[in-house]
Image 1 (cartoon, rainbow, N blue to C red):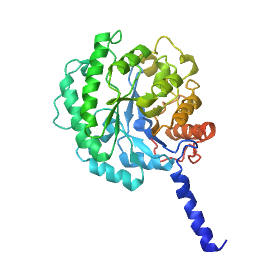
Image 2: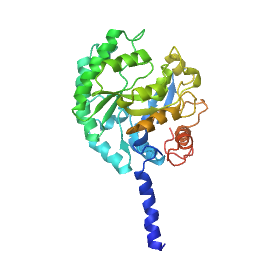
Image 3: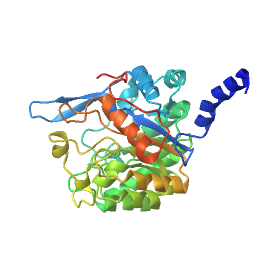
Image 4: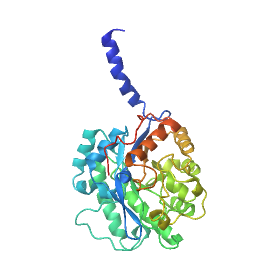
Length: 349
């Protein structure tokens, strides 16, 4: 082989590999992370912790690229500086070679009507009409210009005692109306069942899925929350596959598999986190979930949704946690991400 032929062939290899996708069996699965890893925990006098997420968008995007990930899903508070200027965020992401793949919840625009305190607008309570209108405005004016085609939403807090059937019906009605409005702008509403939220347990989940229109209401399947809510994540992934727009990848611990009662917020925010980096807790059957996604030809994002580590929890730094998740995907699932090493990332907290 002549030198020129060799050089052309050598430079073509990375491009060809990229075209084949990072997943060894399904080239249409793309990989990224949410913004929850980029933050720091602060504790109050009672020892209850709260996560302060970073708003340094450039640094976060650069770190996403550093680990070979393709996409970033910021939380609503992390895009405040771009809420009225999505073009600037799109330009920055394109410059750094990262896709803004979705958004976590609703970033309020300046001058928007205030949401009533303590209400449950997703469940048909006070503020429902404000919520619906704001969701459509955000889809039209923020998500559509960014090219985001699905939108993660937690649906607010769980009412005391869990939602009644009437509240679940109201949630379904609200989701159907929002979904009909956002799809006009190319955005699929994607509900994110979350512990301590209205779709925490399997009954809640199934009831809302039964009452919503599959054409306009989709789901983001969070592997950790699904297990923590007492569900079989592999079974749920297979059964509801047509409605899944994205996977949130987080682990939990084996003790929570098949639980009949969800861990309390106090246990999580005062004691040890109930979440773990991907493959580090033993609670989620990630090979089983990916077997479903690969067999059925998933076309969408699989993103880490792991919290920043807490001081003294034994999991190391932000870098260590991202590296652990990346390397688990490499070794256990064959995902073609570059090997990661804790300590060499950009975000230092």
